[in-house]
Image (cartoon, rainbow, N blue to C red; front, top):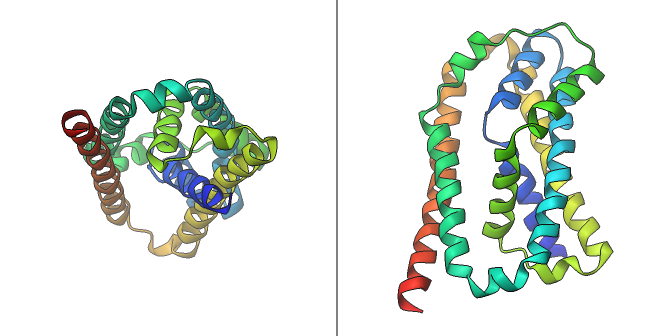
Length: 212
């Protein structure tokens, strides 16, 4: 149970790290307003991801037999999805988004709602969450007990909360010295790591499909 909680915690951090629109807005609001505004936006996104996590776990539980029987294909498809996400981050320039988006002077609750809406209306977030759970190797049999489901969802939410707090705090600390070039480098490194994980999953699936 503890191992699954740690895995869920890692999943929560992993799905939050990519600097998409929510990440960019979190940085913007932290710089232009306050750390709490940036954190509030991130927690809104975390709430939407929590819903996606519940859907993903429920889906995994329903199709557990299919996943077990087609593990190689699941690894292949999941690997391709993760690679696409990683490469899109690697090739995307967040500086362009940062320059184009305008920060509205809104309250913390409104920022949270904005983060929720942006994430919840992005179907790719659900696919990423499902792929992350499959890649982490969280077993569907762990979902039979309500307490286990609660622990997994808590792990995901806590992981996301830790990331958004860390991001907003870091940006706030270095607000006066914040480097846009550093943001670009961080995005490149994150994309490369995610893509590498996707390739690992892809090659593992190919190996099982060919040799096992």
